[in-house]
Length: 155
Image (cartoon, rainbow, N blue to C red; front, top):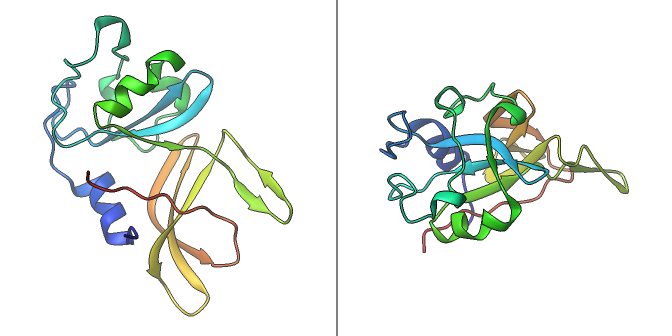
């Protein structure tokens, strides 16, 4: 189904995990997969990435985990060829896909805006966004903006 603002807030701010990444309750980290800027959401059940080979393990700086102000270049780095192993391990990657402004996609690889299914009013809905030095899980804006919907689903 659709992801509500409450669920987005839970994923980024309230969820309890223990991933052994030098920080208790590690929920997300901003960084790069190859040359693409992303946010990785760690799965609840992934303890330390031990299912990944040593060459595949990204470096997740402790100060960057759960830190909305971390810039992408100070977060983690995962090589393009190792990306599938992280997805297989249950990580969800949120890209900085930009947004539609008229007939153009702008701020690709710099910002990511994603609608939730929660309306704020008749013509306004909640969304979350990620930027170079920010991540906010509960903003609202006019529905005419061209943001995608990103589904997060348990398998």
